[in-house]
Length: 406
Image 1 (cartoon, rainbow, N blue to C red):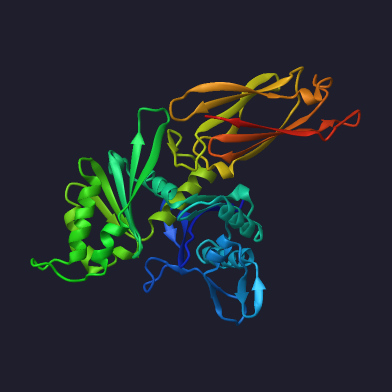
Image 2 (cartoon, rainbow, N blue to C red; image 1 turned 90 degrees about the vertical axis):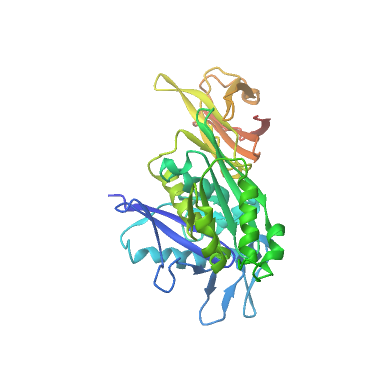
């Protein structure tokens, strides 16, 4: 019996993180490390190596490619993060002692390729390879969270205010149902400057209202003016205040309103369920600027039947795409790739030249085809001559073609 059953989400942030597991009996995410004193199950993003001082701020070091100082000793930040991953993931053993990880999705505030690469390096140090791990940003986690809620909560647009005490942003989720599959995206507005002066002024108005609540109420009305919003979500420690307690019930009039700290980690759990378990969102493409906008396929023959092989999927982060297959050409001099955009279904074909192996392409050569991306809409195809057994050794010739896919 396969003991890889755990569907896990982690919200990884500079100061505090969270971990949750999809509970198959409750059919919802369950926070790990939750207690009466820590209802939000916040985990300090810190480690203690031996008996030395607690190490914090290592994610920033990781982003800047700087070593972490453990006393007078330099430690690679990837190893410090690997230790944090191992320690944090061990929280699952208390509730699920015999189960291992099937899929882990880590959500971070923003995505940068160099940072994502280092996250994967750290995970590999604890034997979690990329086939069981995905990295997504908070926007995408938010979208998965909403789409896994009851449909009446997202019949129209959905709004999210994220306020960590320093930065306040509004993210509005929109679903374009005119496409098949429907496109799901998020637009963002930054209200930090608009709220900054009020945050430093905890005074009351002449009517006895907290100035911060008044300013935020105006911000909300400005953000959603003229739009139909099914639900509003408030997340971040900045909303755990008395002025928010007084204001939020008024903002809930005519719509559903939710406040809490576990939105992103729960969204990561739902994303992990989508990636590693049963798919529920096949009728939707969860999209952001870092995502590939096209589906790339090629037709192959196997056991006498033609079928399409997926080389890249629309909606996946471009830096996560890395597919490799082996092909045996049957007299072909070109490989035909089909590109179909997720937005309008426009389809086009382009050819990859395999003339460097001309003279032995009639079932006498095996080609390795690798597909990666250097930007959301630019694919890099690498072709390698692998030969065909002992009678037709490979030349080890490698060539690449870069193609704009949309």
